Image (tube, rainbow, N blue to C red):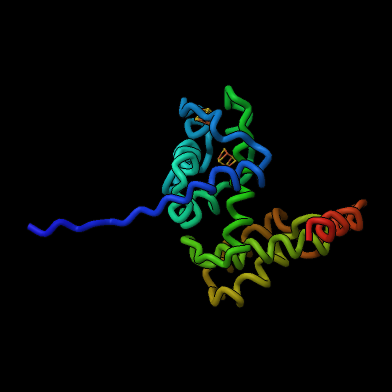
Length: 182
Ligand code: SF4
Ligand code: SF4
């Protein structure tokens, strides 16, 4: 019988790096699982948020940055409000996405980076999200022209997605935030 070996690389500086970026102290997590139990999208993740934190503690940088969990996280902050140690996991997920983008690493979820960049560019330009613009850009660039059209048309007809973006107060301030964060 052949025994296959998997090489697991450990990066001892990863915990410190994520702590610094997110402003959190991940060592405080004692894995009570309350965050994952309340996360509305944990069912779709490969690792729930408490497992992501455990892997960071162990320095498993490649596995964490290559996970789907960091992109599926919707930043709803439910986990942070449930955490007995007040760890802001949404900020940790943000930091993990930033590191992945900066280091040019591949993402597990197909086209997620494209979606992420388009989402932010629209918020930067308009000061808020405009779903019709997002889909108009995302569908051709992801070479997925037709699959979203039926649901998109239904939502437009029901008035869930405005065709034109609403103007908001403070869009210049939002632009400045983007410029400051570089
Ligand atoms: S709720 Fe807080 S302490 Fe509990 S597992 Fe999640 S991050 Fe760790
Ligand atoms: S912030 Fe992310 S990880 Fe936390 S509960 Fe919401 S979706 Fe889940």
